[in-house]
Structure formats: C-alpha cells, structure tokens
Image (cartoon, rainbow, N blue to C red; front, side, top):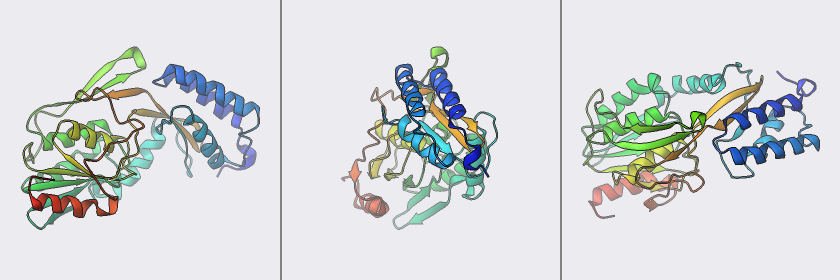
Length: 301
C-alpha cells in the first residue's frame, strides 16, 4: 500500500499535464488545465497525505473549467498495471464476472412486458456479446420491453451498437465520433445482423434512467430516443458524452482523458453536460412502475 512518504505529486502532475496536452479532445481547454494544475502544484495544493486525497483534489481541478465528468484522476486501492487502459480493464473484468456479464435481471411482468436490466456497465463486446444476445433474444418474444439503465455507469460504444441491433429492424446510423488523434471521424452503426432473435423496431420500448446513468448507457438511451424508437422514463442522466482512454500515472492513480467527441446524426449534438432528458420525468425509484403502467395503458402517454 502506498504511504504518504512515497507519494510525490510533482511527477504525477507532470505526466498528467503531458497526457492532457497530447490527447485531450479539446486542445484549448487542455492548455488552460495544464496552467491550472501547474499553478496549484506550485502553491502546494497537492501536498497531501496520499493518492486518494490527491485524486479528489486533481479531479476537482480537472473538471473545474468545462465540467467534463470523464476527465478524472482515479484512485485505485490495489496497485494497477502501467499499460494503457489496464487499470480500467481489470476493474471492469471483476464487475463482469459478478454481474452475469452485465445482465443481472431478465423478468416478465404482467401483460407480456419484459424487463432487461443492463448493469453495472455495458462491458466490452468481446466479453458481453453472449450474455447480451441471450437476454435480448429471450426478451424478443415479449409484446413490450423495458430496458433498465438506472444503475449503468457506462462502458463500450460497440456494445451500445450491438444492443441497438436487437431493438431496430435494420442497420442504422447511431453516432459519429470525432477523434482528436489524426482528426479522424468514425461512424457508429447498429449491426445489419445479430445472433439470435430481434425484439425489432415496432413494439413498445421504454428505457429507464437515473441521475447515475452515465456515458455509454446515456448513449444507448439518447440514440434510441433521438431515433424516435424509445420512450425514456426516469431522471435526467449525469451528462458524459466524451469517449475516454486511461493512463496509469502512479501505482494507485489513473488519469482518464476524453480523446473524442460524439455527434448524434439526428440532433447534431450530444448529451454532454446536459444529460439525457427523459420523455417522462419521475424519480428513478418509480420509473419501472411508471413505464409498466404506461405500456398497459396503451399508446398514449
């Protein structure tokens, strides 16, 4: 375990500022943040007792300019590998193995309404394709479907597109990523074919959200809402639309930096900062009952 005597904030800040300069999707903001972090370091603001406290302080400063919630210095209790993205990948794998692959609940409610809960994340597709396909194929027989994202904290865009493939009738443009690296643009489309049976694009579809719903889970709700495919019920989501990478900058610290920005083909915008706005607003605790009642009541809501 790292102690106060082994934590030197200078090297952590130096590496964080270097990565910001090279990778942050918004170079002008990166320049301002680099100046802020260096000034705070010089003032002694980061002379703290350990990595957890440094994580909190630096994250507050990183998010102080434009409120980017993907921009963080994350603390890990256990030491993390130095490889790019390894810290996040190891944490995700532990969650995957204890959550039935990210599909902890599939249920049938009265009236032939299926519920599929996707939590705590939309895991990398190479892991999650099988459990996602099994759950969505099972739900395909229902007359209506509720996808519960209230406890979903994000994950992989490829898994978002995969899920959408079961909820649409044909290959559909979902999102466009504008990457900083090489000024590259990459479109995300739902797959033309999926393993198993589709729920399809015509039966009633409701998505549940909470104030904790974040990142890739927000994309799933936003993409389907903008396409007019789903009714979103619950709370406004957290508002993180920028895809990010992670770099280990200390045995217990990982900096996560957005490396691109999302642009929806329907709205021409995204949910960054504002969150996904529900079509039917209610508390997260009431969202399932509200969506179920709306389905049973018929088309009008």
